[in-house]
Length: 181
Image (cartoon, rainbow, N blue to C red; front, side):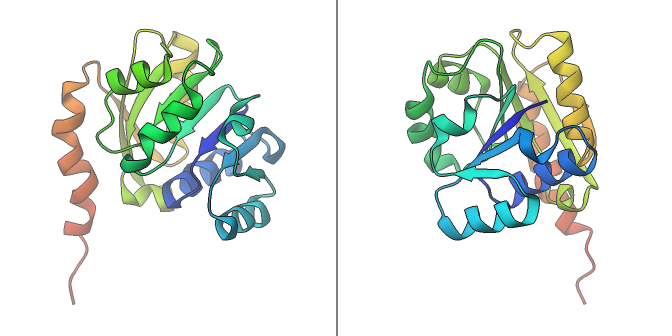
């Protein structure tokens, strides 16, 4: 598998670390589009991957394009990539609040996965809820399950309405379990 990450923050780091440690992809098969020079240098040094500030260049060879950016940056990134993803590519978003409709229309792309990981994913103990558009075929769904399985457990829901319901519990629940001494 070849994967591109748009955004190289903590959750992107957790997912790409899981993918690399589980050998779903080799470092040569991973690229990251990241605007912050210090973060680019860090990710390149830590994982031996290609990191660039050009999102379009980063996604060129990818089977899976992971959108791991802040919600306020989504419109800008979608404008850069609108109509530029190959139909064979799958767009996976961990952008909080971004619906599949928003992603599919904003990217002009039919193969979209919406994912809500939680903080324990950073130590491979996460609980990740996900759903996808009809444009994501069985083999791509299996790939998504494998990728998300590298950061903990994954749960597929067939209707996007369950994503928002579960987000409050999944994303904010773990800190409530940490003892406060």
